[in-house]
Image 1 (cartoon, one colour):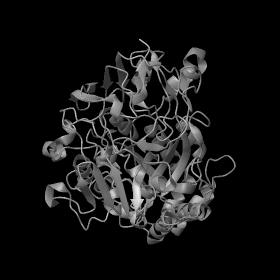
Image 2: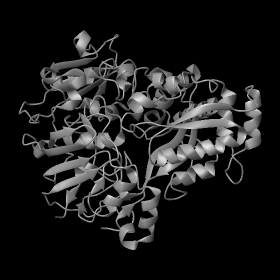
Image 3: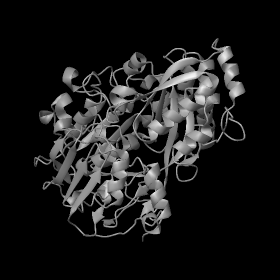
Image 4: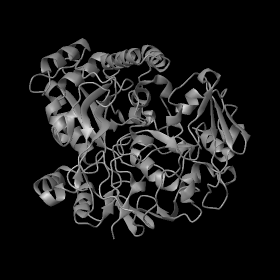
Length: 542
């Protein structure tokens, strides 16, 4: 099967052929090769080739379900939902030949608590496990909430019931780490692999070369097929140059998955042959502008609301790629594929979507800033930068003077927009970003962005606005403890409405991304949990 969107909800060019080298390209480096420190979606998909996890997202292109990976079966729940127990399958080995046991996965989970040493990755478990203030394995021994009754059993003790726990066990930070090979902050330079590929050579900022892990046994792995003999990735290629070389056939796939830029988009849409090898999925991502609560004068809600009303949403959507190919207009937060999606529009921007400048000026007056103010917009190169400059132009119409600060892509979330200290030091009142759910539920989508308990001062913070609102937190907890699905949807809509009232996330678009497949690629599909191609499934026709 081939053609436009052939890899959306189905597998394009299925094949069992083994061999060849899958050539990948990206405009930036991975955020980290340490499974505990990575948070970029494409890095998570790349991690699937190198590391196994307790649970894993399956390979059905129609559903984002999680399935057992190193676990024999999903977690067994007991003690009123406070205890989750997993049995570990035998026969799985690290690249060193050492067999993987429960203690290796327990140590990986314990590393999440060492945020002073290993910032960057998701930290749900820090809040959720009943760990009693555990500081991580480098200072505090073993965590009381993670037990290994025997070599094949792993048990977690929770503070409160959490029905989504299997989803958390599919995140990269459950990839096993042998304690005697753990080098702390340096581990990402040479992690010990448990998946079908191991690192042959890694040059930070330049390239990655993966080769087969000869200790991997496919009979123990229900997820990975490992068809290519090797995988290579070139990092740091300018986005337009990347597109040119991708369409010229120099690379098989853009592993970063940020999507084709405007120039190449027009080439693809005008060429039937190129269009037939392209996909334009709804990714589940929200493209948005964060509006900071700790950077004056945006600590004032009226100043933040002025930004919402002054933004030219029509121009912002065009900067993202245009209605349709680039996505659809977003006026609220929860994406259409989640049950609580409302489509509410609390900040209407006029029939032509170019903004409500009278409302913006009224909010500026309420903030005591009738002549506007100065601020800065954080962004990355490429589409993000175009969005930032478009935003600045729209805001200037009411006297909001915003300079654009282009930051490094690879460290954007670790030490740029994702570091509150950097945000305040540079006066980054606004930031162009996007977000897709860590896993496909409302909690997985919204909690990292708006729950004040997830603010991280040391970097890797995704509650960019530093919204720390008890009302929001109470609603989140109520939703997570609610068994009735209809009532849970109503509560999540209350969360959304409360956050929108605080004016900290300016939604732009429910994202669609244009991807291109090399004609030699086989087994290509857009993973429904990630909105990007599932790299580990790919093979080569020659």
